[in-house]
Image 1: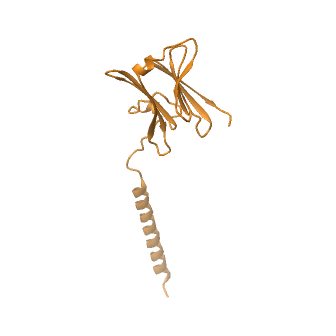
Image 2: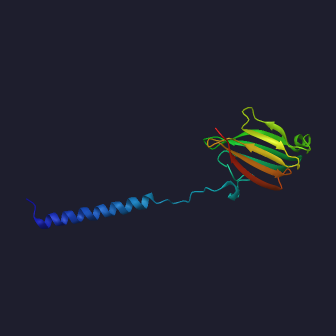
Length: 156
């Protein structure tokens, strides 16, 4: 039979060893780097024009030696982008401002569309997404000089 003092010492050693293991495990689970995630408009390496709906689509316009290119991407569930529409400055010049807004182009499933507004601005509609939200990005010029956004929810 074990004496009370031996049991006490074994119990104290077991507790000390458990605390040691707990501290070691906590230290090994502590992150050593910081996760990098941000709103698209707050990321310095993300040049998209839309802040809203960043998990669903992206609009880019960039100056090129031959003018400007406007590209609209869907964001797939795995996070990769898939180009839906692309226009050069020359393409866009074929669609001048008129007395009313009009559709320039849309994807086959009509989830992405580009309009020329009577003001001369370009408008991208993206959606509806899984929450029935339609995201709207309106920009002046190409490359975009001024950008504003809206969102609305459609009926099912």
